[in-house]
Length: 435
Ligand code: NAD
Image (cartoon, rainbow, N blue to C red; front, top):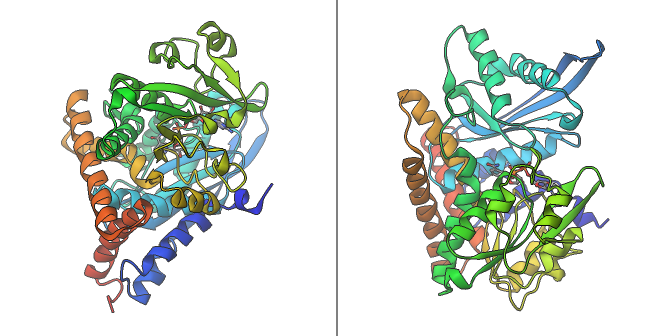
């Protein structure tokens, strides 16, 4: 494996920040302050397992910034979780909330565990144990977790319930991504995938490409990918490939269909499990062709969308992209592109929609969830999605306009907008002098 593939998200995000600090005109003290997290917490969580043995899990919470509002970001359960992964993603959350201009900071949490090996009961104990350990440092006005890789609305309800139990009060705004009817917002499931496609639609408009002529290939078949597929198809485009990790075969596959994957097939009962794995027999029955893991990347489509993994596109596979046909590269996953691959994409002049803009729909609706919790009044789904669409379109156009005006790569334009907003908050509060 090349060194490039092994780059951790913290290094990637910190390097991106460093390379844009100059363009943002940051003072040295502000730059120094923002390149690391405000607070990092490491906890050990003992859990009595179903077999009666106790296992101790290691967890993290990193609060990169609280300058514009409470830290905001998911809680991940992953066997290969590291503090650097959490640091990088926390920093990215700061820029994500800032680029869509919502009044929140950036945070992230993680627990080192294999979620597939945990029973529901063990997962509940782990969620509650995590809250007990981080309780003093989180809360609706300080740091608000949400679902992320391998955590779900049920986990968030256990987390909320444990927080309420300790606080002896009702604080539904402590955590977002809760189930609808128990403090959750309608539209949260759709938010990230739909938000990414709102950006793609605006980019296609700028390139004078008719949606009906557009094709899409996606890495992933989970929450983000499946709703991106649904929205893209609804607008009249054709999704020709998706991919997933198959835990039985312990490898990834691409599933393709030249006539377009029908969203009704993807969302039919039994096609996807809760981890976003496609059932092979179902795929065969729909006529989808099973191909290699990276086949999604090679398709001659209008839009390529990595929506599964960090560092999915790297120095060794970036040249498999069909640069004659692909017009837009929309990063729906977090840090899906290593710096070496990013350099190639930039040189080839493909239109990039950077990750912290492209996938900001999720955190935007999480913010709406908090607002609704505070009002104790809930909007219909249409209203949530309309509000989301407006925020995504405005943010996309701010970034695209700046990129055009200053001849910036769109990732750099997004950084300049986001970092300047956060620096303004940090300096206005008097935390750091502006010069
Ligand atoms: P998910 O767990 O629902 O789905 C992940 C998908 O990736 C699954 O289909 C899985 O099979 C697939 N996958 C895993 N390894 C793979 C591999 N090697 N090759 C191909 N596919 C593989 O996750 P999600 O919520 O859809 O998130 C996807 C990405 O988007 C992650 O990077 C996440 O951090 C990011 N993201 C998600 C949200 C959100 O609201 N869900 C918001 C912002 C960013």
